[in-house]
Image (cartoon, rainbow, N blue to C red; front, side):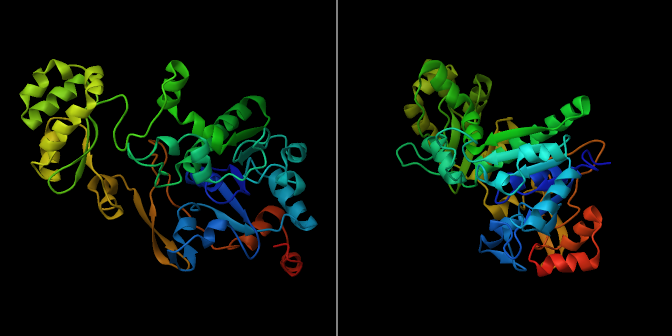
Length: 395
């Protein structure tokens, strides 16, 4: 039995943070009903190229283990259906702009009267109140406002966004954890609750030690490229043929690195005798190390560093990543059958359980693929009733 079997999730979110959260809940066995606008669907369905079988790769990355229901929540009949589905659900996830869910009859105050056990998770860009309440939240913008872009990039370069929408992803993960905690609390109280989280607050919380450095010591953050402001050496170096990352994160690892480099003089030099001293003399030491790493190929260094237990690794392309033996061994590539694509490769499920085996049970759904199925199963509607809803453009 999967951990969330028999838990029903009504997903009226779109784009990334909400769908990422509900995908993880689906991976754990929840029944996820993805509600989409008729004829349009989730915004990410159009975010391409690349496309496969009429679906964007972006959409495919976020929507496995779900069923798709097209529903016009702005129509009175659509509102009624949405509320009935909420009555039968354990969890609802929405990421409308503040006030929109309430206008659609899908706000927390209204739905908790219909279903007091409902866990209602609301994801916004900046929060449901405050001076930025009405701003639209997109990952790139919020990562800038939230401080991440200001510390990302080369030391002497301009600000750079992270290569994936990491603020959205972290928010989705945070939402999943919050929902699981609320489900656990419901076991004790019998009542649901509203969960309120935003991209901005999640990004601020994710600054971790960088935020603490400023709050505790007034230390201003800066861009370091691949380096670390508090650990040396901890960065990428150019070998004879390619880059390699090396993390000598304590004094023992530093001494091992000196051994691999055949530089006992560096190990004996009092200027580099502790991490604090290595940070103090960063520029001169990194120049020395950079020169040493050019003397062998990346793979030659990898062999020696791994043998000494020094954390290191290549900077993989997507091709090398998804052919990496460890990635493949841990089943991080799965192949599923898709109705228009055929054999579809998807990223695997990262969490493993000793007493359950989460898997991709359903491929990402086509737009409205399960509309009739869901209306029959949850609302017991007849074929004639469903045809009427289609004629009225409710579904």
